[in-house]
Image (cartoon, rainbow, N blue to C red; front, side, top):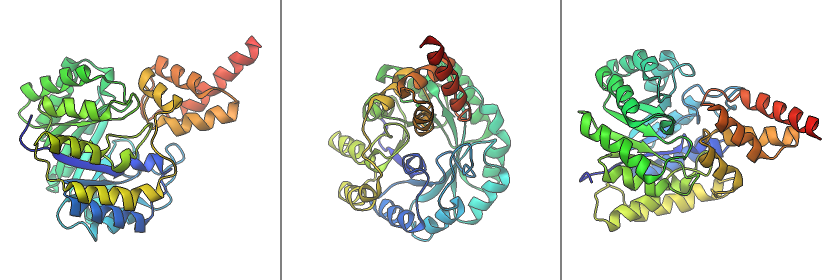
Length: 338
């Protein structure tokens, strides 16, 4: 394991999914200040689907990203203020606006086989002196050798590290080890990992990634995030402290901000219910959960059937609009069967 694990907190980005994108400036200010004081290295703030994600397709934000970023920038003194950008959703102009309001770290996210669509955005970020990562989503859908090929595109583009995201919470610890160990061995830049807890393995998978050489690990307070949530940052901090691994996190302070700033505003506890479990089991993008839940209610379907069908079709982030179509087709099929 690396001697120092860098924590990237995504409570106010991935957690935005679980909050139905309803964070307020006051909430962001309180959480960001607590995280900064607790020792998080990067604090990520944006819509769940990245800068400019607020839309009919992904869900509208209660407060504009840039206002939330500005609120965080006023209280973050030590950590880097970060954001996620998905090419095709966020633009270079959006990146510039985020930079103008204090964002100094950006992760450019693509599907695991499409890192080449990020090159212009990476260059724009590096030209502005930003700490920049290539963020590969849905890594369960590619074998380690393919992921290495895509990661090298990021490496050649000049990113500071490559992040692997188990966006569906589908991977088992050995799956994580095979992917992270290969990249750690073959790349000249650091590797990071982002877990979802749909199979209850977010902490175990993050620990496996760290043991195989990942030095950037994502987490959220109380596990707040899409699906069953993310790796719970205060839990992983405690585990790593027990292992005498340096993280820079003050455990007492991270527990305090989780308990006092995040837990009171959560719409519901992050639990592994049947729908969340099926996301991980079927390999479905975690942010599809709320969309699938609404479609199930609209067409009087079992959400499990929708999620299994989405997994069977290999649907990926960006295809949220297709969830209603799938639900409609399933309802037609069931009515014919009846």
